[in-house]
Image (cartoon, rainbow, N blue to C red; front, side, top):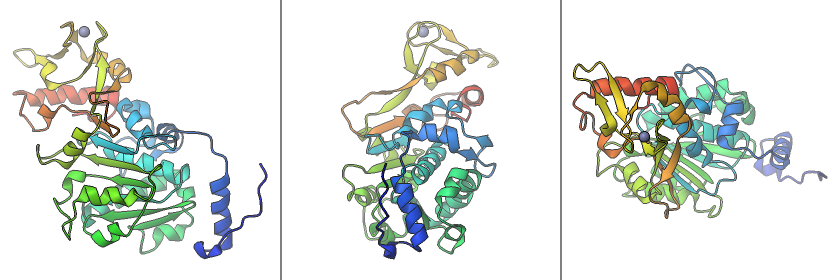
Length: 344
Ligand SMILES: [Zn+2]
């Protein structure tokens, strides 16, 4: 490929050298890669923000693969909604999508948190440790100064793009920012209306409208109050994907639900019953089941990609299972041995 001398308007760059690097980075051919492929190759997790330290492996939590890949450069999904329980890996999806964008698909990006405190925690406990541990993310930042300056919490400049980190309390700043990728974490923590009366989701959706064909928005949250939950409202508009796993006995694919759990009278034994063949599914089956699972759309007409890993009946603690404590133990074992994280 012939590379012409870069014609760079240096007004946009801190220095001609930086502009040249940005141009070279933008023009460099990139091997097509998904977010999960990038994470498996580049992402390293820190003890500050993750229970598992070291190289990221999507295989530890297979249900995260498809949601992450919705944020890939070649994905045609423009809006992704993740209604996940706590500690399922929601924020890791966001960090991996962000790292991928910084390193592989640079563009203007905004991450929005519900408030200034949550924003500070997200930066301190999630983003900065990820940057420190992941060489590819560190390289993407144009300079150490851009990370250590007073604007660290709200702005990071990287070659080929910028990252704004905002919170819902700064409505004017939110309104003045236009990005191609938007990541919103803990949506259910947002106030019903922002200062000035704006609906948060409508206002946030508008931040990517300047990129009608390439925009990507990711909304993440643990659902809170049923009927008032914003993430549930978005998920209801989505294609409503749930994670189906095959029965090891008959192969029937089904989402795991609390109602399928059974236990002995003394509570010492817990098993799952296949909704199709009625066979007992034991704990040792689960690793293979989850690895072979897939997201199935129950409302396939929608263009919004929505993934929920917990049935609605489980959103309220103890609402469906009198021995939930034992079930949670069973569930947690599921997570630790197969999905890798707490799937509860
Ligand atoms: Zn079966």
